[in-house]
Each structure stands twice: as structure tokens, then as C-alpha cells.
Amino acid sequence: MVKDTKLYSILNFKCPYCHQGDFFVAHPYNLKRVGDLHDRCSECDGRYSIEPGFYFGAMYVSYALGVALAVSIWVAFLVLAPDAPLPWMIGVIGTAMLLVGPLFYALSKIIWANLFLDFENPTGTRRSGD
Image (cartoon, rainbow, N blue to C red; front, side):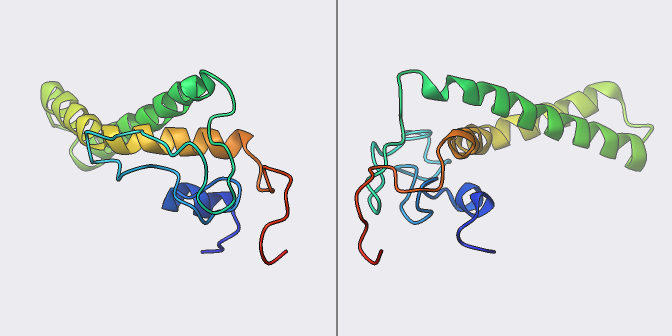
């Protein structure tokens, strides 16, 4: 995977500016620290929270991820097991949503950050090696 792409930043939970520093304090499934961000990047000193409430928009991304998962599971049931009872399908979808919830929460934040924080030097100062 190419390192200087937004996809690299999203899939590896890296800084949206430099794609090197860690974005989250802990792994998404560390439920005590789920969704906690570093204030600044350890590599480029870029700020992750540019204004209060910046990450509220990530709810829309999380909703889209959840809908995509639910529809995918539903279609898989319709194709692979068309005679499965409805309560069983809903139970499987609900369990899947519960299991991937922390991952979707983290993914929604990093996707939202990559939509609005550009791959550039956020502080305007020269980085080492430039």
C-alpha cells in the first residue's frame, strides 16, 4: 500500500497530515480508551481537533458504515440462505453491529479527519528532512 495516501492513513490509523504519527491513543477495542485521540501528532505536531465539536460529523460516517454492513449481511442471507427466519437474520445483524461498533467508531473518526485535514505541514514550520 502506498504510504502517502489517505487510504493508508485510514487503514493504519495514522496522522492525516504526515501519515506517520499515531492518531489514536489506544487500539479501538481497548474499551477504556476507545476513540481517544492524541492532541497533536508526535511526528509533525499537527492538531487533530481543529475546533470544538469537529468530530460530531463522524456520526454520519459511522451511520453509513453501519448501514453498509447491515445491507451486506442482509443480501448475503437472501443469496446464501433465503429460507432463514427473519428473527435469526436480525439477530446476526445485531450481533455483527455490536462486535464491530468500536472499530466503526474509530474508522468514522479517522475517515472524517482525512476528509478535512489535508496532507500538508499543518504548523507551517519546516520539518526535518525538508
